[in-house]
Length: 270
Image (cartoon, rainbow, N blue to C red; front, side, top):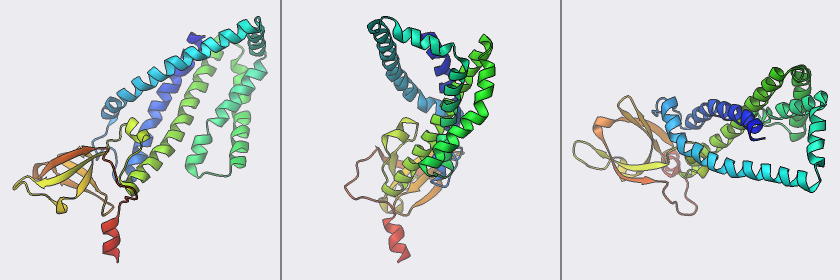
């Protein structure tokens, strides 16, 4: 069972990581910069995600053990009836193909929600129809040979990872909007590598505070320049590293109740 589950988990992880960079692009686009301008490339992203991947592994292992244990207990409690039922279902290729097709159609839910968020009933109809029309017959044909069954597992796992990735992109984008509006990052975007770091900028020539000594979010650094987000003015700007000192660094600062960004931008507009 562990071997069979592993053959699905690996494609899920690979596809999820591949889609994750799109989420990072969507997240930084809220601040009008690209990940490259903030110094985020594939190697940096992998390094930031390493802790997250280890955490997911620590969570997945007990869950997998519980699933295997519950399945074993259910089979023993029913004197093998559960095992016989599973084996009987696997011997019906149309049933397996239909379940896999419906699941693959459901993985497009995240993409549909990301593109526009239609009515739930419409999304269910589209997902089910897409799964049946697109995957049912190919999956039935793949069930004829062992290599085809293995290929079907890879397809199902990859689409599952992509579907989860699109759901994650949506949540990452909403998290970035929350940072833009409130100046505070939620746990999700910090787990996927977003650094909620703030600093008071100082002039490198005379060590005097810049911008009235206000706190600025450090989005990253690239090509000899820092990228900052000014929460008070709702602006993103770059400043040379040679002329800038980062003082009084803070990570995930606490905010008073009711705090929001854009106070100076509102004053200037009035």
